[in-house]
Image (cartoon, rainbow, N blue to C red; front, side, top):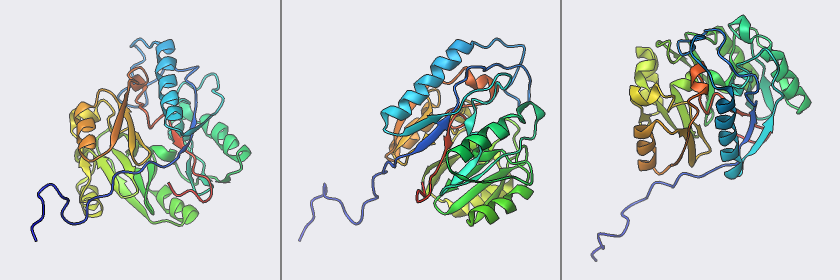
Length: 286
C-alpha cells in the first residue's frame, strides 16, 4: 500500500494549548525614572507617564481579550517601579513567597504585595534572603527555574524549594542588562522555553541545553528590546512588538504571537512579563 505524500507520517506534535491565567497588575499611575538601579534607567532621559499608562492599559486589555483574569493592586505614591508586579511575589498552587528587594528604592513595594496576597487568601511565606519574585523565579512544568547573579540571592533558592516542594534549578546570570531571569528567559509552556544563551554562565547554559534541548534560542537584538520578557498562556505569546525575529521563530513553532509596545516602561527596564504576576491558585499548576 502506498501512502499519499500529503498524509501525516507518524505522530505529529501537539498544537500549543492555551490555559486560563490569573494575573495581578499595577497601573503605572506614579511611573517615573527618578533613580538608576539597572543599566536601562537614566533619570536624565524624559519619560512620558501618560504614554506609559496607555501602553500598560493595552497590555491589560490584551489579557482580558484572551479570556484571562486580571486583578489590580492599588499603586502607591513614591513607588514608581510598583508597576512591575512580577517582582511582587512567587505564587504556585495557592502558596506565595513574599519578596525582599535588593534596592531600598523598591523596599516598600514588598509589604503592599504581601498584604494583597493575604487578603486574596494565599498562604504567604516571608523570605529569608533577597528574593525578587517572578522576576527571578519561573515555573516550567514541575521545575522552578531560579535566577541569581544580580538580584535574587542564591541562598533564596533553597527556601523556594522548601516552601514549594519542587526542584529548583539555579541559573547564574552574567550580563547586567539582563539582571532578572525574566529578561533572559521566557516560559512558553510546561516543557518549552526561549532564552538568550549569552545571558548565562557556561555552566547554566549547559544545564539549559540538557533540560530543554528543543528551546527557542533568541538573538541579542531581540533580547535588548525585552523580547524574552514575554507572557505565554501556552499558545498565545504576548510580547514586545519590536522583537520581530523571535516572534517569527515562535510562530514557526506553532505559537500565536501578539505584539504590544511597552517602550516607555522599558526605560525603567521592564516589559510585558515585568508588569504581570501569575497568581496561581490552589489546584492550578500553570
